[in-house]
Image (cartoon, rainbow, N blue to C red; front, side, top):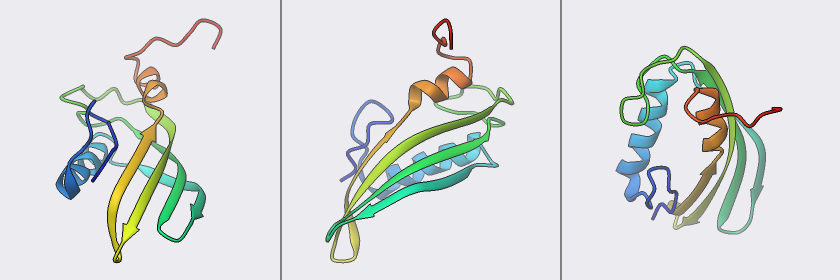
Length: 110
């Protein structure tokens, strides 16, 4: 089960995850993901990451390309069972991404 809520509700299964990855690769073809931290336990792996790229393709239901470079962070927790992903939780700084794309306002003084 994918408990991430990129679209406002929990994602369902590996096909949904593939669609998320595909949408980011379409919108940001030069996408670069850096793993900033990695922590693991017996059955979970946690990644704190930074993603950067240039918005040159449609994104989130057709947002036209802006040509803007973006950089934002996130955290993903993956639970493993029998060598497979059993559950996934992901949070990303969507506000920062939307501000960089010019969709959400940046607070005064920032």
